[in-house]
Structure formats: structure tokens, C-alpha cells
Amino acid sequence: MMKQFRFFTVLTFLLLCSYPFFSETEGERLFKINDPSGAVPLLEKDIASGNISSDTYNFLGLAYFQLGDYKKAIDAFERGKKSSQSNKKLLYFNQGNVAYASGDYDLAETCYSFAFAASPTFYEALLNRANSRLMMKKYKDSLADYKAFVLALPEDAQSENIRRLISYLEEEIEHQAAEEARLAEEQRRLEEENRRLQEEIARQEAERLSREAELRAQEEERRRKLLEDVASSLQQTETTNMTAGVEDVLDYDYESELE
Image (tube, rainbow, N blue to C red; front, side):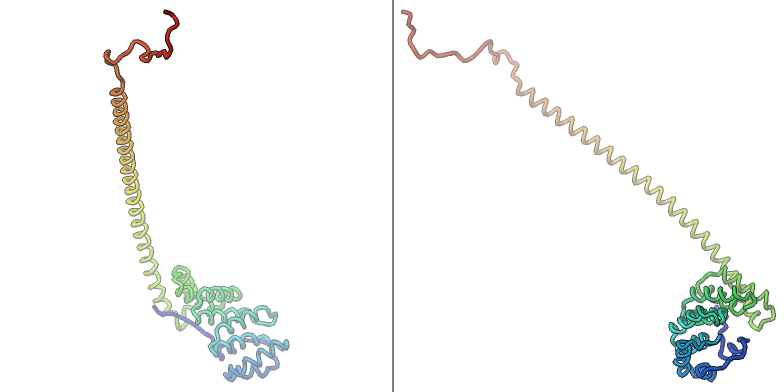
């Protein structure tokens, strides 16, 4: 799937900055002549000394980006947001670009949203937010952004490509909706089958317990009868075995005094 992504070149960035005239520092000058490695330490020195212009943090973040240090680039833009002199719209936009380039599409989406909120005609931010959402498979949100971009800039050089992308997204969203419906139906069937199986297992378990209880009752009855039979066999009831009195008598071991 085609991705539309607009990134500021140094020249484009400078043309978009319509700031009042200020005295250019050496760090800013080095950045403008495409010497990021020379610009970074001088720009950091300018910030440390408080010699900050509306471009300082933007130049520093872009210089770090050119050097491939995305983490420091994002940090520079973050620091710049705390400066009252900075152009927050461009800070958010460029931070979003760096985040996008580093694969952090969630941060990129957030940054582009702030940039676009700061200027509702900042359509580059809108387009890049659409790209970020596309990368995160937020197809409905991405589609809305692409449509808004084409509606605002119907004659833009990329509008025709974006219209094709919109068509693909609409097809994909429709396909996803059908797939979600299919999966929901499949899940319903699985849940129903699982319920049926659980009921069957419960029924079988109840039958097993009932059989076991019946067998225990039968065993208890068998043992009871066995004990009764044994007890009955020990009980002597024949007349020949009966006695009318005490079987033992006293023996006298002395002679009677009666003659």
C-alpha cells in the first residue's frame, strides 16, 4: 500500500518560517549550510547561555535527526516546547516526523494532531497524521484524514494518488467489517458448542455421581445384611442350649458341723 509522507527539507523548513529578522548565531549558520555535526554543539551552547531564537530548538532537533540520533532529536523538540520563543507548531510537526521515521507511529500521530490543532490549515500535518494512522492500522481514522486533505486541497500534486488510497482503504474497511462479522458468528457458535459440551459434561458427571451413590447404598445394604446374618448365627435360640438358672454352684471346702 502506498504511503504519502511529507518531510521538511531544510530549505522548505526555512521558507515556512516567517519570523522577524534576528541575528544569526554560528550554530544556526552551520545548520543552514548543512553542517549538522558542527551546528549541534554550538546550538547546545546557545541554549545553555540563553541565546535562543525562535529557530534554535528546531534547528537543533533537525540537526540531531540528520546525524541519525532520533532520541536526542525528539528530546530537543521536547525542550523547545518549554521555550516561549519557539514555534510550537513546527516543533510538534518535526517531532512527529522524527517519531514517524523511528517507527513510533503513536507518538507521531499525537505530534501531528497538536500541530494541526495549532493551525487548521496546516495540511501537511493532517496528511502525515493520516500516514501514521495508516501504519497503526487505524483505517477509519486514517481514511477520514485523507478525505479531509483531498477536500481541502483537491488540486494538490498528490491528491490523485490519495484518492486511489482512499478507495483501497474503503475496500479494506468493508472487508474488515465482513471479517469481524464472520469471526463474531464463529465465536457465537464456539460459545454455543462450549455451552452444550459443558452441559453434557455436567449431565455425565451427575449420572456418575448418582451411580456411585447407588452403588454405595447397595454396598451398605449388603454389609448391613451380612452383619445381621452373622449376628443371627451367633444368637443361640435352640432349647437344648438354654439354661434355667445359674450353671455354677458353690463348693464347700469344710465339713458340715451337723452330724
